[in-house]
Length: 229
Image (cartoon, rainbow, N blue to C red; front, side, top):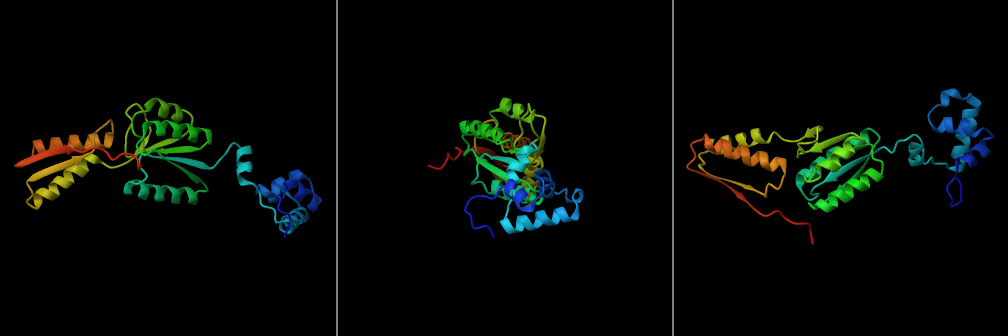
């Protein structure tokens, strides 16, 4: 065990093992089959003796990799966002990636700020739950790296989307309510504000009600909750 408080370097391992720096790099990089057994043993013993721990971030950056995935959330307090984030983080971990999470708190300026930050971190992919107001910025990022949208579409952006079939969900909800005898129906929604998922739900509700024998049905839009104070 190395008693020094300073970080052990690859040069110190090279000196302790009595081999070339290239050999140590191959060993650390997983190319041990390219080394003689005696050379690999010397390096292994030096690493153990010095308690050397490779800087994975530096190695990945040298290879043009960060193994970071960016996750942009519109509202981190939303239970849907929490469940989705848990699934994304689990998948990232299983494949050797780390997740960088940014929460906009439904603030469009924060969205721009976080997108710029994620770009500067050189993330290798983006998973975005957008507020829907910055199609140009998202298009620019999509030209540089893989992107997936969550829940909300951006019409000008041709990327994969993970979300609900909102029209079918509304139809199933109305079927269920009417089968149980409910006729006075109310859909409560936040302002549409360019949010595709809300637009789809309201449009589906209006369309379904027009062709169903309901005694009364209407849509009520309530103010969106602002960022926590």
